[in-house]
Length: 437
Image (cartoon, rainbow, N blue to C red):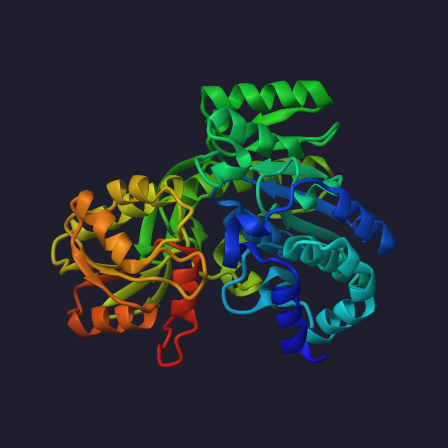
């Protein structure tokens, strides 16, 4: 078995949520605990930080990992989904897990795993914990896959937990109300493990407070002590924050949603310092500025082309896309701006109508569909968009849509590509698309 065969085995023998959706979801921790014991409980061999939330957990996880890495700690990072290569999910100091380890893990454990019929995420989580243990990391930042309470990452006992925010997503699994979704996310809150809440409202605050009281730990609401005084966009992919403690804090993540994420990160860093993590101002600055280079993060308000600017973002639900829509409208209102062009595709289990109602009406749309089973048919997306007052044409592939938008654009235009993580993934794998820094 070579690396490609090992990855194909994972995709075909274990249901992959990003491809098939609901069929891949397995509730409960039985398989996770069983596999973990079989492997010798590798997650107990290093410190962890647990990150959950509807949106922003990827940006928060990567930036915390970059800060810890800049502090001289050997740092593991486990996130999902991947964009172009499975190995993106499991990193140590920014370097993806080795192909050899992936192959060896499958070959060594498949006889044990197959009778359990585990999900893709259960196997991948076990693989990540094993890799981090083998690499003898000092600390690992672990992002939940879906929810929290029954997520298979929830066997860890972290130093701190972080819940970025609560929004309407994955309601089939997590509940129809904000309270129900918050309850599932709050499941990562554990005794004597401080939890940082990035964003909250009255409903979610009550859920988190009650859960913290039940298990016996403290909850820190980052919004109660906002550290960001102001911000200024230097270019479409760089922003500078003003904070009392860190003036002119430069960040390589520039989407509008990132201000809330930055506040959450700074609050988490303060708590880590209380737990004897030696984190200097220089490490914080380096982690914020160089997060993409240090961790391999892509697809967060990433500029991939110039003249015209081409921006992609993996925001994929109404909670995340409201920030994107606002940012696009702000940019398109500036003097000298040309035409806003949006290449958009979604998956069939999202709040499509709610998302479309948020999108700018002054844009030209190129409706498309990603190369995954869950992709919503581009013609259906166009029809739903018309009901929201949006107009555009249909393209059967992301490549066709992007190439057409580029050919029709002037240097003053802006092309945005998004609506789904998988649309961004298809963009980044286009063989003839030159991605510029």
